[in-house]
Length: 271
DNA sequence: CACGGATCCTGATGGC
DNA sequence: TGCCATCAGGATCCGT
Image (cartoon, rainbow, N blue to C red; front, top):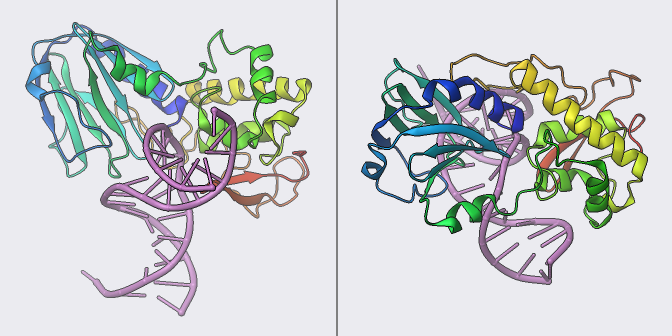
């Protein structure tokens, strides 16, 4: 579910409300991808300074230390004073003076990790290899094209990898490549400067529009206030195999790349 | 080293 | 309240 827009929409939906709150208790459910890294009781009494985002991670700056939250494939966050009783897939809950923060994650690919302020290594291990933020000033065309030229991997896989640019997941990778007119199977190093420019613009465009629309999620995304972004942004190619291209009516192709589904229009997108 | 594949886990869906 | 195979928005680890 969560690519950059969904994570950012989640952040925006509770960052202001939780800022300044004091942690009152922490409850864990079943194990997530990684252990929390401290005793739940250790977080009690600290307060939440603010909530940032890096790639697909939510970063809660505490009065001492940092809490990293990743939503994995199926995670969603709720924050409120009157949450329903915890269900079987609620695997992290932090009660605060401003309300309860809860992670629901059926597949448990997500994680909540505490990084002590004095231990730089933990945050570094999770965040250290991440590429640039696509909606930030550091995402510039010259560096982007230079990075593409160094990589032999196909462009779809490179976008998903997150080492060049973060936040582009499986849906938006297909969508951005469609907008850029580039076939997902194209080796990154063979993309010319003008085509890299189109891709650069397409990534920013599709992600920023999705944030504005509240997260385009084509399935079950909802933000921390329970508001759904369902189908608010129309997919051009994602999950449309066999259906007519919205631009040229040619049938959309569905293929697999690295165990992930990819969709493209063979007429509108060139190798 | 860069790359491709297997892997973690639960739930939904569709064919039989 | 049928069974089985396949697929799902992520990211790490491991072998080559």
